[in-house]
Amino acid sequence: MYETHFGLQEAPFALTPNTRYFLRAPSHADALELLLVALQEREGFIKITGEVGTGKTLLCRLLLNNLDGKASTAYIPNPHLSAETLYEAVAEELGVDATRCANTHQVLKALNQRLIELAMAGQPVVLVIDEAQAMPEATIEALRLLTNLETERTKLMQVVLFGQPELDAVLGKQSLRQLRQRITFQYQLNALDRESVSHYLRHRLTQAGYNGGELFVPGALKLITRASGGVPRLVNILAHKAMLAAWGQGSRQVNRPHVLSAIRDTESAKQPGLLARWL
Image 1 (cartoon, rainbow, N blue to C red):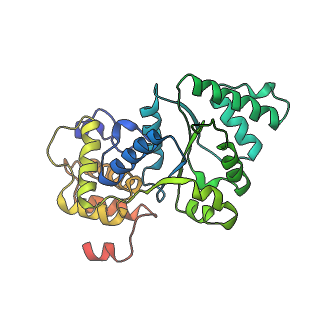
Image 2 (cartoon, rainbow, N blue to C red; image 1 turned 60 degrees about the vertical axis):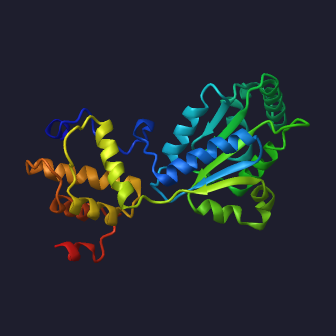
């Protein structure tokens, strides 16, 4: 669309998570480092929380890429499952043919055998669950019971939970206190500050092939930061729409009017009092 106009090889602000566009902003870099260090400890649960659009799924995919060849991973992107279905999904992710099991007991038995085989081969096992706040309470308890599988010296499987802040409320229930006590490492992703938003925009443009001067003027950058609240997904949406507006007017830079147009067209952007101040 506007790629040729701005000298880009591809669209820089697509919403589909792409690890090539990962920016090691302070909060996100710290979260990744915590994940990698925590997994080396080989025990307990790890929990990463963040508001909608703060980059949890991207971080999740980056973690899976980092673990490739170093651990056997089971990835559950949609955990709104019954306990029995969760067991089957984890088993299948680890190469167990659950269709040959007549009941849940047999699934767990086959899964336990598989975990032992991987442990004997020196292969760590990591279960990664995205959108964990969607898990029913009974399924969360089943997950805890699943991690009871262990040898005399080590856990057979580690669990990483990615979720929205609602996950903390779910885990705060008295009935789930046993699992809550097993969370040995946790981190909350923060929104980007103005400097990080600037780096974020420049990084994505560079990754998309841009090699010109500053595309977003300071006033436009400030507006994007304030209207998005530093949430990466909203930054992407506003930057994309602002570039569309600039392209439509034949401008080689994104100015404040272009961003204001994007804000008006984005219901989730922070608008009260913002437009009046800049008009």
